[in-house]
Length: 199
Image 1 (spheres, rainbow, N blue to C red):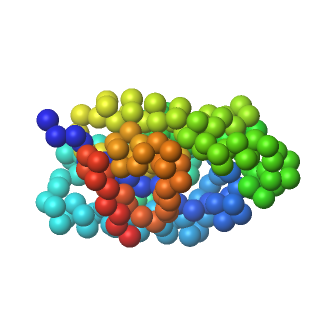
Image 2 (cartoon, rainbow, N blue to C red; image 1 turned 90 degrees about the vertical axis):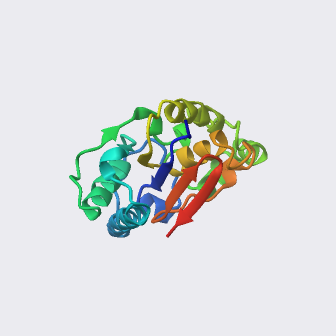
């Protein structure tokens, strides 16, 4: 059986994204630009489905439980002409936990926690923020999520979970995955170890 295709959307922009703050598990709402990015992603998915002759009934729709991801999914589905609320939530798609660092900028951490920040730069894949989790840990739950898929899926989640999925599917080596850019307002299509971006 072919591996499921994942139409992956990072949630739209928040004010913490603009401020360069580590969000992690904090439930920060979308800003106006983020809501527009969500609608744009819905239009992109609709166009891709139309081009490929896909039926939305044959595809699963799932989002992270964090509000910024769920709101992005609702707006994207609305832009596709679908019931905004007809999607599943999966805890495994929750963003990487930055623990005690959440709400901080990297500039603040250079002053407050320079040794640990240097350790993170040295090995971002295995680094564990205080009371947080590593990208390696995120990849374990993303593997479990992906291996449980029984059909193609539209998923709305986060930058960290997207990087974990890249490592799981062999799009990027583990050491490189945390350095990959996962942009907002873009649809990432994972087909096996091939990744295509649509903006």
